Length: 445
Image (cartoon, rainbow, N blue to C red):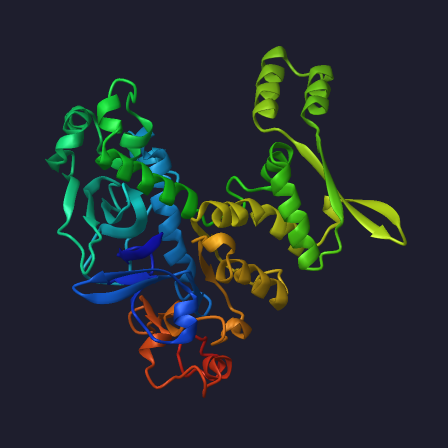
């Protein structure tokens, strides 16, 4: 489960800000309804919640905050291949509006895993510091704590890195780290190297250890849960491919379409790749160009999707191009949505309200708030829809505001729980937000 992210010196984020789903216990009914897990630290009860909704004016920093998740994901997925600056798909930018030109962007993420191994609950924390100018990694570390009956244990270090050296390393992975230190890891995260660039058969003893299992768990949470772009691997082509592979996924989509009144009774998927390859073969391109186009087409398969609408017991097929933007958005993002719900990971969505009616937004959120079989999926959405600000849906701790300071141009993050005078029963959160009582709204003159 995702617990917390801390970010500093990243685009509009200057001083350290935190976004957390891990909070001190509250007796509020909705807080407990939205609690996925409880534990004790220093004999004080804490709770991890099922999600949060972000509010803020345009250009306040919501997207920058979510972009930090995508940056961490890309570093985990791809940085083992980075040998120079130009290899980076996503680059951090340091905060620009300050005379003190600090160049290092810093990120810390924490996850909590119940029953991780032999019924032992653990909490692990990963830190990364990277020079936004040179793109050289300055610091990196991974530690974990055991969750005991009334507190957390002292942290156990899996590794601590300073530039290209690893001065502190778990004995369980020492031989792996010794090998990694001999390589050029200037731009590579150790996490990425451990997952993607080692001989697991040769290091079978190391990869069977608790330390490596934590590395794998971290990489899975970040790679699967920190995706913010619905079109990154989740286009309609990816949706179509998933439909072809998994009949259960199709049934879930159809049931949700019915529940949300999209008026779609069925859809069909046709793989058009072979037809495209045949057309390329008949074209007048050179053999080299043909070979390249055919290889690319086979790698990135093309599908045609049509929906079925039933009127007076007659089925009418409709091309996906004729469907609404809201329908397309739902289908494109459905892989991430249902993957999160089924595999209990984080679902992130920027501009969540875009192209969706309020009732559909509420329906999607309810899938996380009222999960089946005690699942523990989580959500993090950015929205401009004030109608979602409902004390029957969210605890105060789950409503996060992002506001840009007019003087410094830096993004600030705070939650509704910091407004102690605001109650669940006697205040209309929507009206108070629109009236500017919480900030995080545009100052329109």
